[in-house]
Length: 125
Image (cartoon, rainbow, N blue to C red):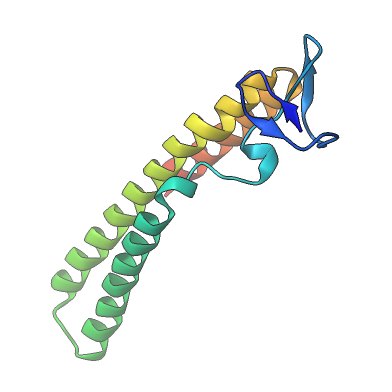
């Protein structure tokens, strides 16, 4: 086992970790743990609720509900997805980008660029 600068232990010879000052830095991201991991159950519950909203939209169309009422529900569903996306983005920044910052080097720039592109996609919607 190797002890990281953050005090965590990792199997010796673990790949994907950068060397910093002679000590191997192994982050959660190296272990395949994503930023949303701690809230996974909460996120799944939220997504199921959004799925229910979308199914409700299908039912409304099937039942010939008034257009404005359907549009109101579309707006609510869209806001729910946007809120979910912002939470996920925040967790990505706090976890994945922060892990890259600990390691330093080109990985930081790559993670920041990746997050910037994700934000740009969210703004286009």
